[in-house]
Image 1 (tube, one colour):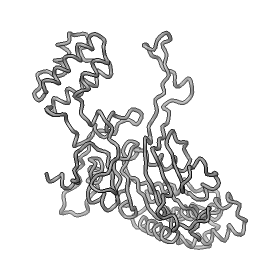
Image 2 (spheres, helix red, strand yellow; image 1 turned 90 degrees about the horizontal axis):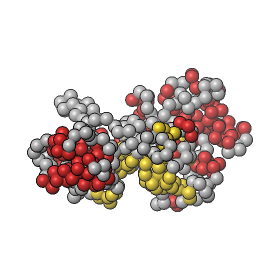
Image 3 (tube, one colour; image 1 turned 90 degrees about the vertical axis):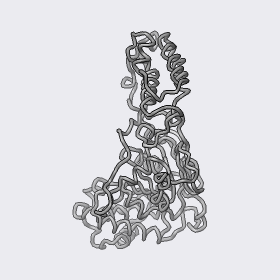
Image 4 (cartoon, one colour; image 1 turned 180 degrees about the horizontal axis):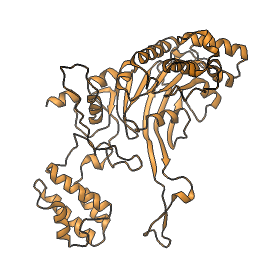
Length: 435
C-alpha cells in the first residue's frame, strides 16, 4: 500500500504539518425538536404567556487540537463527556454547530465528500452492530472500494489481501459475521477501514468488550498497521490502560471540553488538572500490597444542557479555590444565597431582609465583613425586586472557579496544556500532593 495521498504527496513530505486541525469545534443538540415541542408556558414572557425553549445539550463545546501523520491522539473521559460525538462530528457524521475542521490544510467543507471518505475511515465501538449480518465478510470489506468505483475482481483481490494483513484467512471471505468471535469481527472492521488506503482512522472504543488478550492483539495490529502505512489515529476510549499503551498524546475531556492535553508518558506520570489527577488515581492497582482505589471526585456529573458556570468541574473539584477570608462552611452558605438570587427564589421569601439573611448566613464564622455587607445589600435589593443588582453585589465575592471558565494554556512545559485556575508554577500533581 502506498503512503501517498490523493494529492500525490508522500506522507513524509507533510510529517511536520497537521493532518487534522480542529479549532473551537462545537456540537450542540437541541433538547426539544420541532416547533410545538419547543413552546413552553412562561408566565412572565409578556403579552402571550408562552416562550421558546432553545436549550441544548452541549456535547462538544469548544474543542481544539492537531493530529499529525503517523501520530496517535487519544481522548479519554467519563461516559457521556462527548468523546464519541467529537469523533462523529470530525468525520461529518454529525453537522457541527460551530468551529472549523481542516484536513491536510483544507477545510472539510471545501473537500469533495468522496475524497474525504477515501482518506478518513472509522472503526466503530461495537463490531457486532457495525457489520451487516446478512452480508459476507468479503463484501463488507469491499464496500468502500465499491463506493470508490473499483472493478469487481480488483475489489475481491484487495479484500483477500486485507484479510491476511489483519491476521485472518483468505477463505473467510465467504463467511458471515456471526461465524466470528468479537476479536475477529474487530479485525474485519479494521480491514474495511484500511481498504481504501486512508490517512486518518478514527477508532471509537476499538477494543471495548473484548478479552484482555484479544485487546492486546488488536492494539498490536493497529500499531503494526500504523508503522507500515503511516496512519494517523484518533483514539476514543474510557480505558486508560489502552490509551497509555498506544497513544502519543492524550486529551482529557470533561463535559464537552478538554481540560488537559499532554504527551502520554508525561500525563500518566503527573497531572496538573484536578479532574485528570482524580481520573487517573481511580485506576485499580493490581499490587495487593498497595492501597486500594481512593477516588477524589464527589457528586454527580452536571447536565450537559445546563453546565456549571466558570470551570465546569468546580462542582466536584477537590481543589476548589475558596475566595480569600472565607471558611469552607461560610462560602457554601454564601454560594447557596448567590444561587438562589440567580434563580430569583429566596428562602423565606415573604420575610424581612434580616430574616432572609439569617436563614442563609446565620452567624457563620469565616465570613469576611465586606462579603457580609454585600449579602445585606443583595437581600435588600432582592426585597425591592432588583434581582440584577442583588446578583451583582454577591458576584463580587464569587470564587474564580465559578466566575471564569479557564482556557487551555501551556503549563510546566510547552508541549502540554491545562485549563485550571490553580497556580501551578511548574509544579505537577505529585509535587502538589507532597506540599
